[in-house]
Length: 160
Image 1 (cartoon, rainbow, N blue to C red):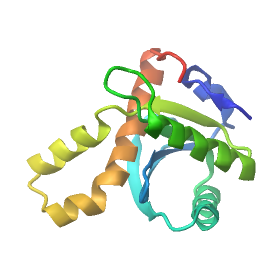
Image 2: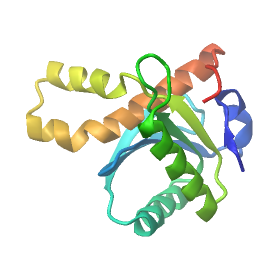
Image 3: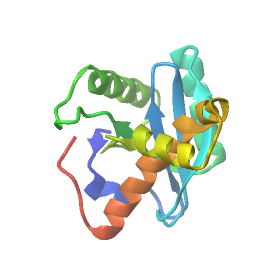
């Protein structure tokens, strides 16, 4: 299955299944879960990366347990909209994942997601330790919610 566009989102997963949002980093993968109606994203957890095969086993077990039908993965564009090395590693991650499981994947612009989450956590007066424990899952939630909001508004960004 190819990496899909946001415009395909409503048609690529069976009714009643949810999207999982991922913020893929070198050390962690932030995970968020969407509701079945694709309106609300919630932070779920952080997966601390070890080895790709064991990371994927954990991720797939979580997907099965939560009835996840598709993934919306943060697409780390540069601020000018160009792609760079982080996009290459995210794309490689997605293709390696799809070799193990045929799951619909949508790449969604994640620019400023971590900054927005960090700002909100600072405003909430969270400690540095607490922010580090929550940052990636909240960023994944921000990415997923942003995709849901764009789908609801009928606005679909250019292909990734």
